[in-house]
Length: 523
Ligand SMILES: Nc1ncnc2c1ncn2[C@@H]1O[C@H](COP(=O)(O)OP(=O)(O)OP(=O)(O)O)[C@@H](O)[C@H]1O
Ligand SMILES: O=c1[nH]c(=O)c2[nH+]cn([C@@H]3O[C@H](COP(=O)(O)O)[C@@H](O)[C@H]3O)c2[nH]1
Ligand SMILES: NC(=O)CC[C@H](N)C(=O)O
Ligand SMILES: [Mg+2]
Image (cartoon, rainbow, N blue to C red; front, side, top):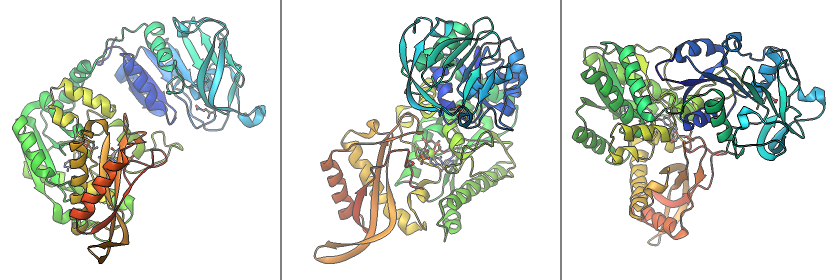
């Protein structure tokens, strides 16, 4: 039997930082997949009806007490399994092999670039690697398999891992001690494609069009004849979510745009006209500046700001729902990176970086159920889906703008006055970027207003005003980012305009921090 998404792969997550990259690689190979935490893998299996299983890496150690295990039913399912790093170790252990912790073998681990030698041909290497060849891979482990389970054989070795790749071709079980999902394993994407296509025998014909159809069916089933309100920001994610949901349930949907006073210059008017001109979806615009500003008074801690804003958004949505005669569901354009950065999936040691207002910032008790059709996707995939839905380029190409808006770009206390100053500086910066034809080359660019005053001299007067920071980054999915390398003259021109035209700013600095170690936003 095949589930609603056609042929799929289930990825069982043990808490690795790079599990989401496995998902990307599988979808790039044209196969739909979903990630489920190890302790919810059975339910996910029932829902997805997968044709193959991938076990992720983990910060945990197999020999340690209470380290996670894969549900036995996965091994009983008869499906092909690929275990990656911890996945290889846990599979070996559960099938009767042996894993020893790094401190016990005394050999240390392998971290970073490593080379392995192929000792046997196998289906995983088909058309790619041959016996006797040496290949670069990326490792990150301290523990190692010291005895493989019955039925397995070694097919590749490395200096630090005699079991670099093991295979049981009759059961179609494979284990790699290295990480094929990361960029630094040059052939990794092809190995994963080999697993899903050759080993699992999948056609690889999944497309965004198929995702759209499956999601539409899923939304219809979830919502029934209920009413939905969708938080619409005019950003890419919520616009795509709104149009998808509208295709599914038509006029059961109303969009709500919250003007919390933390928007960019003229943003409210732009979103209203763009949306009203292009789409025939009822849109309510809520003027909520006063309540947000009042609530933010005296709040300086970034997490407190985020939590307040998340809760206040929900309060506004609930009030609007009431005015519409009640709504059963709240739709949001939540993406996978929002989820992964806000929550620690397995309750394990992967840590919360910041509470995205629409995930970790949500209050515990909510009256409406969530509809989040983009929850499994990355930004670039959402853009593809937007194009698939015929969404106008003006929407699809917009830089992301965080729900908490300018509040997280004004370290320290947020006031209307400071928002007004920042709005002006930010508008000048973006205007110059557009004029220089750089908008589409940049993932996100914005100004921040620092809680620091410095001395300047303008027209022979002494000034004592705020510092404005400029940020611009390139990225594929927002998870990692590089600094955009502007020409120095460009930055000088922007700085001059900002200091000349914005009262309250007398100094401009450029942020040269990549992510990691920085995050994109300053709070
Ligand atoms: N001003 C707002 N009014 C209503 N809903 C909002 C507002 N800002 C954010 N949201 C809700 O929060 C969700 C997450 O915000 P986020 O900024 O990640 O997505 P987006 O604004 O839709 O897209 P983008 O990432 O391109 O800015 C949105 O999808 C939307 O549902
Ligand atoms: O809707 C949102 N609500 C939030 O609370 C939030 N925090 C960060 N961002 C956006 O997420 C991306 C990654 O940002 P960070 O590197 O700062 O975590 C960047 O694109 C950020 O703009 C948010 N979006
Ligand atoms: N990346 C991993 O999955 C690591 C697995 C295990 N924690 C080890 O150190 O060997
Ligand atoms: Mg946004």
